[in-house]
Length: 320
Length: 295
Image (tube, rainbow over all chains, first blue to last red):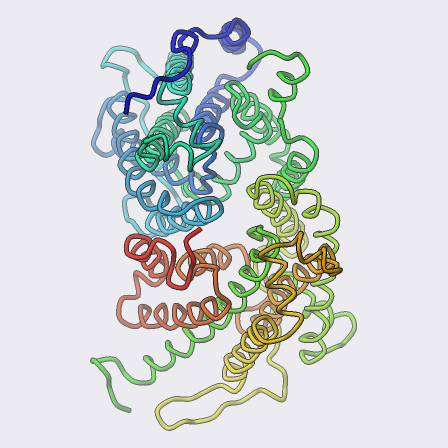
């Protein structure tokens, strides 16, 4: 189909506000290790990437996946297993985890896009729960203990990642590269078609787009980036555990994205920062963490649907 | 004792009965979800939490007021149903004109709150709830021993399901309900209070979940997370059945419970995942679900 997308040049030129916001974000994370624990910041970066990956699906295709922990958690398991048992170098371990997430994304995506709207959320949740049970039963995941003491190894055989600064820089580079890739995807002609599907699916079909293929592609991309986040997290914490594949993790990434702002470029990262910081303060409160999360869900849905970044963008009328 | 496919009949029928019991809960819960979805277009993520609330209400009634099972089975659904109606008036009503996903997110948040609060006060371990004296004991059927309480659960939930089906498909009130599902504006123009109908429908759906909770209390104990894991399976049941038909929800619920029971006998490792695998197969073969309309 020769359907031209409006103003193709404009698509590739990022808005000034977005460039500034990106530079500020980068600067903040470069300076931040002087003020905060690197491990905390790396946790933020991993979850920020996870939320950006999730937002690719909900924000730009309008599909709510309630099973993204599946990709995050399984990538984390495979990357941890690859680094510890197979003795792969960190970059190969992360690649192995990411590839696993991509393959799972193809299978789950192909099943889930057969239904729409609310069913989509239920199907992804159910399939994620099925894979959670596999993770509980599979011997290599070590059940409740998880895969512990994962070696961080040497990046490309040279850079020693057991050094906290080296690890931090690696995670930051991974995050920034993936962030730019996601940004590039949502502003490409492909991304415009995704938005068209979100706004009016029947119309996109009538224009000749193979809607299901676009949805599947978006789903696989989202799963893959979630996989990068999970695989990296396994190396940062040197641990892969059941927490990362269980359904509360799927809920958490939904919440991060919602708090930051659905369908905004910077929202998910901001939401992840907010939620990880909050949970850091609430660690001593045990089960109340879930109650606080629930309250934030309710507040966001009732009165704060634009999220932090969405609200800022709305007030200042800039694109973020 | 005799054997079927190398499995002792006692074990086989025992698991089938357990499957039927699980099926009763799947049917009651997916029925409630279907009723709510039909009217509000919302997937009630708090359904598991409300099922748990039903069981806890029964527990509180016994503990603090000395009211037993038979009181609980009447009072708990009403109490939890009223809480549901308050939730509908306070929250869901305001989300009516938004994307349906917000309803899902809201009820997910509510489920986190309710289950979190109960876990704080009651921990993760279950609290025992005794089988009512009038239903203790069992009957020897010759090929198996049938505990009276379990027989009661299967028969009573089947009856409740059929009554609900009758109310919705065969009465005037049900006709209003179905009409309001199809075209709320037109039904309103005929002078029927649709917002109230919606509130009551949500209350009834939630009440069904609470009723299931009361019935589950003597079997599975009362625990804060009894609903959290169940609800995900019920979602799979709903995807398999499709939410288009009430009878579909009932048949799928009982049927899948039985299949799960059989899996426990012949292939125990897969018992947890059987329903999810069936869901995947149904999605491949009949994407709209067994009884669903294409949405």
